[in-house]
Length: 508
Image (cartoon, rainbow, N blue to C red; front, side, top):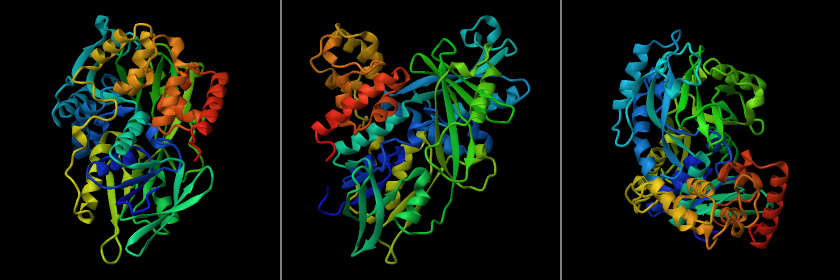
């Protein structure tokens, strides 16, 4: 812990908090980030896993947000080519819903609102000519459209930002809550409480960022004893993961009769991800879970399009998250703005900033981070210039090679290791894969196997370098190996981690 005051204390280890930590540390500020659970433990690991402009936001005239989001796609692909991938979206035309001319206009705007460097533009599709993209669809759907966006491993995006912040000097504490904070003696005095041991300690800071996500207001009323000026709408989004429903590396975007859309996305090679719902919550009562009604909604919406109905027995996993959207007064959860609002509070003398983050979306986290730093820049005259879009995230520096070339090189250098395993490892860790492989020349050298391609060498790395403390941190956030792991596998992993956590002093 810091004995001297830190320049910036950040509350919240989601994508906004870690993005701000990385940006601030790179501009020369001393940074401490405190996350009460695991990194990406809530909203930031429960998204639809897309880096996208938000085609449907055009209907709500959110042109600035769409333009900013589209511009970020290329930047983020350069920063993290191992976890962010171009993806083609197939939109079957439903004659009873949005007319084709409206979709064409929307796609024209989508193609031209921001410059495209590597992503191809939109096209029309005739499904009647034996096109692979029409094969899994009902014969009623005779034509459609295709456009570009990106897929992302959302939880890894968060962890990589935290690692990037640490590499620049930031301190990142997980399972640590900020339980009290007050302005005193020209500094913020904050109480940090370890959520495992219950022990508390004090830290002083020159400024605080409240990036609490769904708990941004609770943090203000609790730790700061303040009455928030702004409101958030808590919108639950639920997803189901099924056995793979179609061939090809494209995804589908389906229009629904209620005006909403859902996606069906290839997921972890063997599965299809379907989501999301929009269900408003009055409050958060424990971890969000998908309801039977939401499950039925997603199954029904997908079955409206797929030739083979999607049934409950195809589901292998489900998850839900709560999006903390800025309350713009719209009564329709799907129409509430996905834009963000930055609320700055200072002491009576205009010092000691407290910046609270409302809203935002995964795609714009980096721009939100820049805007947050700009908001508090007057309090830090030594602050450096914006930089975050020009440097790769950890593992993203592939020495100028394409990802395919990087993986091919990895497989050539390690002929004794399974090629599929190497590909999946690289998709999680990029250039850092070599540290995990170490001197291994055969699969037996990787240590104990915990199922789903998860080996001891990777788990040890995740504990040493990526703040993984519990089995779920590894199975569902640092990796998605939980999709294949059995109950016995999970128990063995938890026991192994408990032994090595104590041995390595990580309980300290």
